[in-house]
Amino acid sequence: MKSNRAIIQLIFGAACISFSPILVKLIGVSLMTPTAIGFWRCFLGALILFSWASLAKKPLMIDMSIMRWTILAGLFFSFDLFFWHRSIIYAGAGLSTILGNTQVFGSAILGYFIFKDRLTTKFLVAAITAVGGVALLAGIGSDIEFTDLYLRGIIYGLLTGLSYAAYLVTVKYAGHKQKLPDFVTLMAWISVYTALFMGVMSAIEGEDILPPDLYSWAVLVVLALLVQSIGWRAISEGLSKLEAYRAGLILLLQPILATVWGIIIFSESFTFLQLLGAAITLAAIYIGGISGKTKATPEPN
Image 1 (cartoon, rainbow, N blue to C red):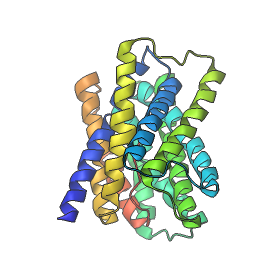
Image 2: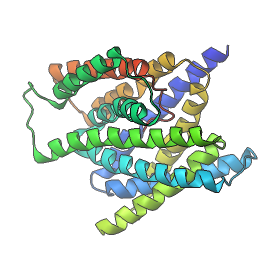
Image 3: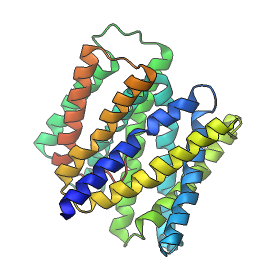
């Protein structure tokens, strides 16, 4: 019974998270900058998460020894959103999300050096296979115009995976040092620092950070509530009750659904070779995530 409930929680969480690139693209083409969207997603998300923790009578403060890791995690997550939001706009919701999920390989490699996690032969084969899958997914061999913006979108998508891997390993390392606080409180503080760093980035860019209209505000609130709060919470609870291989397989729904929503809502198109590349990459991500001794991610983008 607990297993079935955890599966439902993960499916629900993955479905919620899958709308993240769609919501970003809805306002990120002309209404707001990618960095500003990231700022409001995390700032509003932090308010929701703190309210959630308060209603559940959870401690709102965390130990200062954990706070430094929270700040570092916020920095890496701000890089993740900085790159991912641009990849979404330049390369598409589905493609950017699949590229971002290559974090599995970065997490495993960082885990090898930091935690001495063992990398199996199966993982190495999966990593090499993923490179081929990504090449096909990006459009090599297909009749696709490799414009400057499109190429930047591909690069930003891969940098998303690296940044997210660094974020996950930071959280894991903090957990190795000492017991982490309640998940909702931890994510609230990470959201605060992510918003802080993204605010600084936005100021450096010199762009207006304020949403221009009620439509933008509405999309940002949905992004903060559905993705940053509800989706994260559902996935975190489900992960703790399932084996890594089952959780990893279920979480692949996120990039798959994001791709479907991109096709339906934005008419994003894929050639046969790109779809083949997507299938190969997703299979490699799943196999690499299990054989690389990495836990399923605490909360996908």
